[in-house]
Length: 205
Image (spheres, one colour):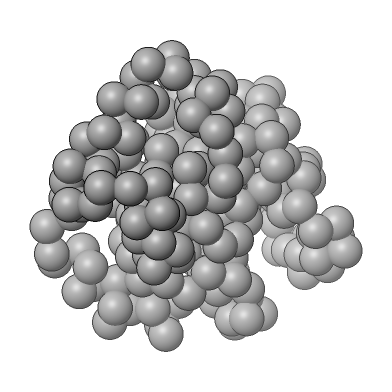
């Protein structure tokens, strides 16, 4: 039986090597990467069945890389592996179309299950996040996926020019998104906007 092809990405090389050793028992690991841009290029080149990536990495982070992969190769399963246990971020990822959201603390028991779910076209969420994430998904999200991406990058300390570059937008478009975000959230200062990003866990990896 043909083994599934997996691509891995995480900015911590020691963790990445351990992850590869764990998964090589059952899958063909065809690439490991430490930044988001290299990950997207690898997916286009290697045509893996599943991508396992951290949420936050240099060079266009994992969440943005996941969005690009889902746009360019919707047949590829995407599993996010992270320390971020914020249900709001997990809900954002699920809305975006990822197949799995797994906490690193539960990777030893959950990751293979999430990969198998992705291979079957299903979704998997670490059990400790299920209740909070379902609650987030059932509520109305005041921001679009693009606005959440802009808020996340701004919250991580990026300038609007850097956000524009990361998302392939013009600075003017980013400024417009920022204005609409502040309007939707009812905040009136950069400090309040940052506080909201922090409260949603968007500044964490």
